[in-house]
Amino acid sequence: MALIVHKYGGTSVGTTEKIEAVAEKVIKHKNAGNQIIVVVSAMSGETNRLVALAHAISDQPVPRELDVLLATGEQVTIALLCMALEKRGCKARSYTGGQVHILTDNAHNKARIREIEDRHIRADLEADQVVVVAGFQGVDEMGNITTLGRGGSDTTAVALAAALKADECQIYTDVDGVYTTDPRIEPKARRLSKITFEEMLEMASLGSKVLQIRSVEFAGKYQVPLRVLSSFEEGEGTLITLEDEAVEEARISGIAFNRDEAQLTVSGVPDQPGIAAGILGPISDANIEVDMIVQNVAADDTTDFTFTVNRGDYKKAMKILQQVVKDMGAREVKGDEAIVKISLVGVGMRSHAGIASKMFQALAAENINIRMISTSEIKISVVVNQKYLELGVRALHAAFGLDREPDPV
Ligand code: ADP
Ligand code: ASP
Ligand code: MG
Image 1 (cartoon, protein in one colour):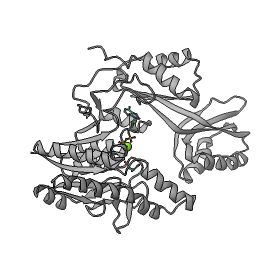
Image 2 (cartoon, helix red, strand yellow):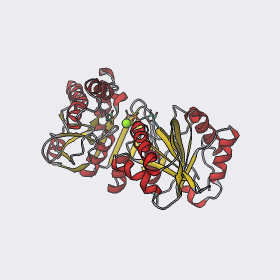
Image 3 (spheres, helix red, strand yellow):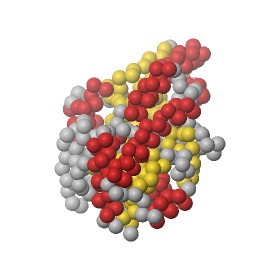
């Protein structure tokens, strides 16, 4: 008998009809001779609604209370799903994160899972029950409710699969797998039958929200077999694999993008030791994460220093830099919120030269100006004006032939 963890995202449980359809699916898998643990998200739109309620009260809601509020979304879904299962004669029990004891650290709104107690879950499974667990939430050592950051139900599912040594963790969502890029942006995107953990991690961290980045980290660390599939259609989905298994030998496996960035430039900075520390020190002291960084070669003894931050941190960063400019005797600070980052990802990139130049040519052919570039072994990212997001993604998708099956090697 196999133990399978299913996870259903917001759109998959967006109405009571959809919750009933999920119940049917779970029962089908159970009747095929499996033990099933189900993790569910809040009904679609619910978490956003709760966030908006909190912001109607305060610009900066108390993190602890925000978690108390946000955790209610998933609690609704677990109860409704269990009712739908029981109605069909399938024994089921729902648990909140605290009840099943998903222990996290105390970093409210972005907590990390430390430990999961498997005793109750195992006993229920032995008693032929389906176990339904609320995604996205846990408790800290003091019993305070915590949440795991947006998209966190993916991580709950993978963590449960790791803790219980499940045979597979299946993430059911509104697309039938991981695509070469977001199919909402490029309809010609192609489903990948397999992708390596390393590539999936890179795609997730560069903006592909199909899986929360921490869920991929977890799956890689504990070697949890992970699959992304459609809630609505039958299919194989996409298997996230270890690299040494056979993987499509494409040079590029996908294109990720991130709309959530903003760019800041401090210009006319005196060219002397300590510049980067002087500019970025106050930014990191304010807990603002910096992504790409570029410092130009000095001309006239001064230089320009450009970096990107999360768009939500833009105004705060701008204010800090205005002070830094004064203190350093720099010329000015400028910023742009209307930028996006587009990235090519692929482990096959390591062994192939010329990918960067092909990327830049494809963007140039569409007259897309590149503002910043950053590279690593398995990715190349560029920052461009946000109005070029769709055009840029589609141009690169075509240039690298991602709509076609890769040639056999
Ligand atoms: P859920 O509510 O089930 O967690 P999400 O909205 O978090 O679903 O994730 C699924 C969405 O991820 C898809 O609808 C799709 O628009 C988006 N997405 C982004 N990049 C990709 C990709 N490379 N492959 C598939 N989907 C992607
Ligand atoms: N409900 C949470 C969110 O919308 C967690 C999740 O769906 O994974 O981010
Ligand atoms: Mg999600």
